[in-house]
Length: 221
Image (cartoon, rainbow, N blue to C red; front, side, top):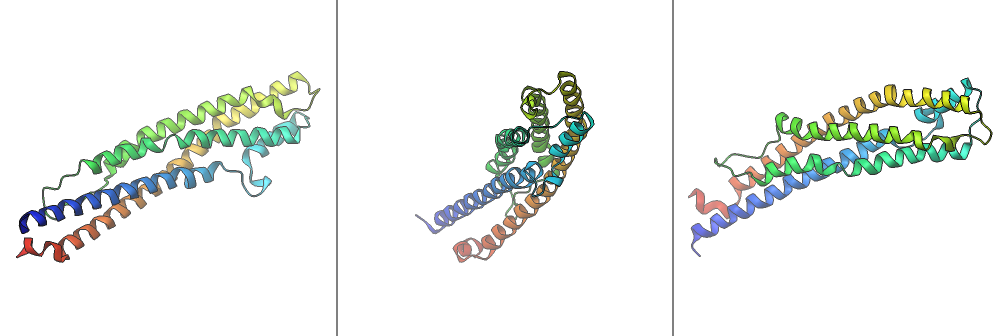
């Protein structure tokens, strides 16, 4: 193998290593977005007074003069959160796949060209993600109607339960859903900036090694 061929192989290996590193950044960024940032919005808060869902149920129950079943209430709220988390885990690929495809197809035409994750790339990736998140939130909230009876004590009047269900589900489909989706959008925006910055830093390291490593000296002579 000639020196020129060896240098060409080093270049290819260096490029592949670089692409793998960027893909890893995308994967870690997306996993962190879903499992840490977004999950933090739906996890059980440290204090009951911070629990919007439980507080709303207790507020409406007080107005309807209903005493709720404590265990049933706890399980109902926990099941809602668990369902959202489980459904959100399946969404990681939506964001990752579009961005990874761009990295895998990266074929630089200039010596100083690097991979960049643009606003356009992120907008396209996040459009599908946000659409599916909204769909999942609506689905899980709609399913609450099938399980809400578990929060009531035996003997609770039917009319009182109907009124409470109506008020609670209206809150969940309105204010709660809107606030949750708004907060998720903000988490995505922050993570987008972190991703772009991380990919740019990886590109700078790639170029620095390419321009300064002795492995490529023959190419520069």
